[in-house]
Image (cartoon, rainbow, N blue to C red; front, side, top):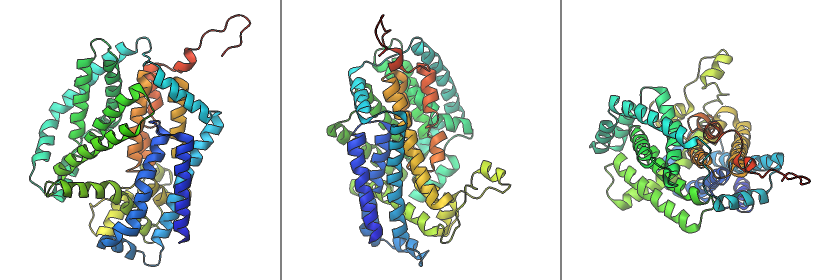
Length: 449
């Protein structure tokens, strides 16, 4: 009872913080905290108190650690995470001297300003864009991406057979291509789409080529989420080209678009689904329930059966400690609860932080995530303003946040592109923030503004 009360209080504080400090907009901090509230707020309570209790697997998870208060521990951990994310955001605001009014003014300027294109940026992006088309086309042909995607989509196989096929054939054999498919190529596509939408000459066809080839590469991963998320990002990109504030009607339209895309991918991944109703039930489970079920699996297994890893599943940290790298936690936890190696349990970044360092990991991960996304918001929205690079940078940051909600924070930093956002924006827009560079020169006897 006490843990439930703590979680509900933390949830209320985080929701109030979001409403009062952040507001409803497409900045990275509002999106990160908003997604936590949506997927691990009332949805978590519903799963752990109602929906899960009607399933056998729920009790199987709890029976794996009969002496532990799994739900109570998870209540407290999620509450601490929400508060830590809020604290990380507030610390960056205080340390940077940027107030809530400063953020509000920056959002207003964004809505009122045209998209700035720094000198030479369009030509540089055009050259890089055609190079990307060449690279993407070579990989598309060499790895038969279209054939693999069609074969997977049309294969008359069950859900688990398709999972096995995806693990065997999904993605590229080249690590760098997989990495660039996740972050660099989409960032370039976002830049080109923005340039095309503002009427840059000779940009429409190039943008279409890059978007099409990036989408094909994502389809060739044979995973449901990457192509659907990429298409949703293009819709959000169009919204950000106008304003970062988002209306309830726009949110509803994005939710409907997401539901349509993910329902389609659900049918492709699991052709045995009986109809739209069954597909929507499956989508609800995969979207809102399984993300909390996975956290239960982690908190039941660790540290009650499996010890905290102390980061030793990371090859670099294991080498520094003179140890052999441990098996990835998502493999080990999945094998423990299902009794078969090859079944994985992937969860949002708190689960991985708990697996590695327990309570300290939860708090530090929350602080780090909140601080990072708020710092990026300040650099992109407050300092630089609306440019072709900052719009694409925010879109890439949204993808990094999506990755953080399905895997470890360190994966979101590199594969998800959160660490690459500002360097890539600087390459497009230069190192000087546009808001600073556009300030008028002070006249004699006048203080600089």
